[in-house]
Amino acid sequence: MSFEGSSIVVTGGSGDIGRLVVEELTKAGASVVVVRRKVPEAGIAGGDEGDLSTLEGILATASRIAAIAPDILINLAGSQYFGPFVQQEQGDTHKAYMVNLIAPVLLSQAVLPAMQARSAGQIVNVGSIFGSINYPHFVTYSSAKAGLHGFSQGLRRELHGSGVGVTYIAPRAVRTRLHHAMVRRFCEMANMKLDEPAFVARRIVQAISRRKKDVYIGAAEKIFVKLNALVPSLVDAALAKQTIKARELFY
View 1: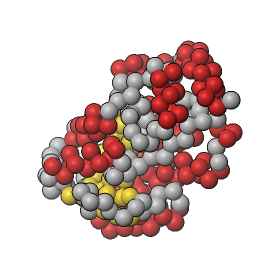
View 2 (view 1 turned 30 degrees about the vertical axis):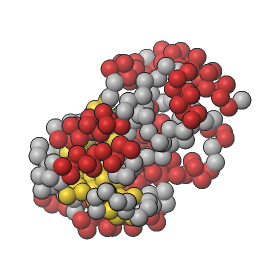
View 3 (view 1 turned 90 degrees about the horizontal axis):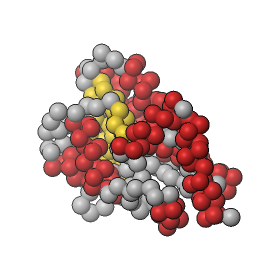
């Protein structure tokens, strides 16, 4: 699939991964609108300021991007909390589900009518391996991404034969500014591999261009995803030591 002349909306397009995705799409000839919370930064493609952490902000953004009627919508914006669920502030819990799940759902709903009318389009939801392997101390993030995976699968089945595709991409841990020092310490303790943003951005663009259905990044992670679906008790046992190590960071 060629991006030449395509109209694309990207949420979270000014983040470490998003910026690189936008650069690749722009170089490929696409017209990209980036949805971000802050005013457009220098060197970033045309932007639309939108707060995806509130229902009001999401609905306002949905109205604006519906008017754009993009060929492709990329739901990349994310919000992550690492720590004991019981210690998570209620406002952060609300934000986690709004940004990671409610926003992609409502924005997808906003752009679908135009895509269905022309029998062409693509919705891309960037989730996480944690959405299939529900991780301790990432409880709200994991469960929101699990919801996004379920939404993507259900919507894809509903849109079968319509000309509108749904792509779900699940990166593993990425070395971004979203990861604060404690997350990096946990990744080291758990021997968790961190991918570079440029690598993940390339995989995202590649998956979109090939109109893939589901993409999981990481060979070992793919195996864990299958094990967690078939024999979750094995994954429970494998994560037990990591869970104990993580507790040492908080208690």
